[in-house]
Length: 113
Length: 118
Image 1 (tube, each protein chain N blue to C red):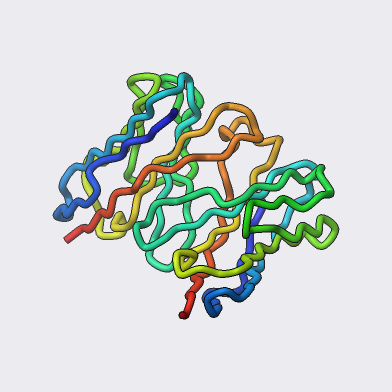
Image 2: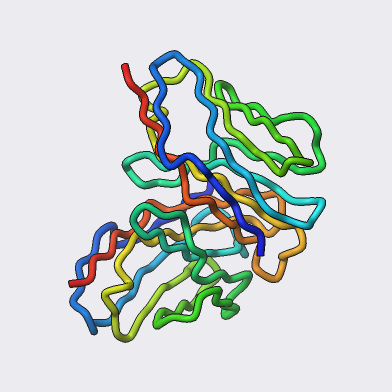
C-alpha cells in the first residue's frame, strides 16, 4: 500500500532563517505531488505541484520554492523565512488520473519567531 | 478560477443524530469531481467521500452521504448516527477535469468545524 511521510512534524524558526521541509511517498511511482499551506481558521492554499521529476509549478508567488529531486521526493524550501510563512504545511500525492483523490501527509506546524 | 464556499464556519450535532454540512461551488465546467475531506485535531486530512459530476446518483460511504445538486452547484455532506469521533474540520473540495496542467490540484473551501456532543 502507498504511504506518505512528511517531516518534521513541528518546527520553530527565527525570521530570516532558511527552511527545508521534506515529503516522500512509498508504494507508487510517478505520483503527482503537492504542497499546501493552511493558515489558522482557513482552508488549504495550493503552493506548488509537480507532475514529474524536476517539474515544479507555482500557484502563489512568494519567498518559498519547491524541488523534486527524485520521483517520490518533494521538498519545500526557503532561503529567508518571513513571519507570514507561519502555518501548517501539508504535502499530498495522487495518481495522475483525474478521478484519483489526493492523500495527505501528517503535516508540519511551522512557527516563525 | 473555481471557488468553493462553505457557509457554516461551525456546526454542532448531538451524538446519534444527523447533521448536514453545506457546500456550494462556482464553475462553468460540466465535468468535474467533488470531495469531502475530514481533518480531526490530529490535523491529518482524510478523504471522506467523492462524487463525479457526471453521475446523478449521490455517493454514499457508510454513515456519510452527499446530496449533489448539479444545477444548483451544491454538494452537501450528511452524517448519520453521528459519533464522537466525527468531530473534526470538514473541507469541501473541487477538481476540474480540464486542469491537467495543474496536476488536477484541488480547490478547497474554508471548512466547517463540527462539534459532536454526548
